[in-house]
Structures are given as C-alpha cells and as structure tokens.
Image (cartoon, rainbow, N blue to C red; front, side, top):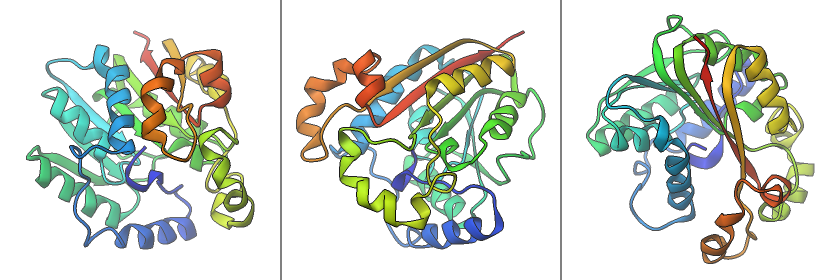
Length: 251
C-alpha cells in the first residue's frame, strides 16, 4: 500500500478530498525506505512476493501510486522503466519527490484508473497497492490494468478488504464512525476469491493470492518476525489484514 495506505476512487468529490489529503504531504520528506519500520517490513514482504516476476528490462507502472513507494522499491530492485499514475496532482507531486530522493526517473501521469490514458499492451508489470478496495466495483480498474499489460505481462496488487483482523481491530470504531470508512468509499469487502475470479475472467492465468499481516496492533514489528510464516496459510487468509495478488496476462 502506498504512503498513508490510501488512494482515491475517481469520483469528483472524493478526488478533491484525497487531493487535499495529499497536499498535507507536500512539505513532508519523501518516504524513508531504509529506516526500520512496519511499512518497510511490509515492503520487504511485497518485494519477496514480486521478486520472481522482476525482469532485467521492461516497463512497470503503478496505478493509484500515491507516494510511489512500491514503485520505488521495484525500481531499486530491477532496472525497469517506471511510470506512476494517480488522479491526485498532489500525490503525483509526492511521487516526483520520491523519484528525486531515490535517484531513479519516474514518469508521472494524471489519469482515472477506470479509464487509463495508456496504450493497450504497453507494460510488462502493472502494480497497485491499497487502491482496489476504494472502488464499489473494482472490476473496471482491474480490466484497465489487464488491458495495458502486454501478453505474458505480470499483474500485482495488494488489497486491504473491509474486514476486521487481528491487526485492525483497533480500527473498529473508526470504521463505523468515519464516512471515509463506509463500504464502497474507503474499503469494500471483496476478498481474494473475488479478485482471482475476475482476473481469470479478464484473461489472466497463474492467479495467486496470499493472505498477509497476522499480528496485533500493539508492537506489530515485535510480532512480525514470528507471524510472517503464517502469510499464505488459512490463518493468514482469515486473520490477516491485507492480501497480495499476482497473475499473468495470457498470450
């Protein structure tokens, strides 16, 4: 998931609201990708999941990039040409700051995730982190992400479904009281099975999901070293607070 764990669905009011949220990050430092933190621990797990798919050349794009921290990780791990897409101009400004901080060029593009201004079959790797759960119907976004993949290209997403988990039980009252947390606005409840089915219907193969994040809200880094072995198990699917997906576009 990108910085702050949020990206905006492309409705006018919410785009404006999330753009205001990202404006609050314009004066902050770019994401710190090196200091020990839970965010960086999670990034490590994402990169381990992604590692088999990272080639020595090609083009990667992150849809709903936010700060582009996930894309930055990919760029540091593999010599790919990087592109970042978001509806929020402020988020793209933060992504540019991330690009400058890591010393790797990132081409930033403002576009609606449901109607991407990108050519069909033009990317080897399409990513999203903490984006898809913000849409009442994520299928149009998934369809666009698959459309811009070349045949044989790799789809990756991590998703935070609207559900209680061991880690997110502290969010119960915030999820109930905040309008941004209502179903279809902040988080929809679609689980990994739904996404696997839709990706297969869109022509993807080798679809894999991995439930992750089984640890308590208090001192999660202390527990992560012991509980990360539960990622990808039935317990991870049940009690984890997010899941990762990968697939290949057939052809």
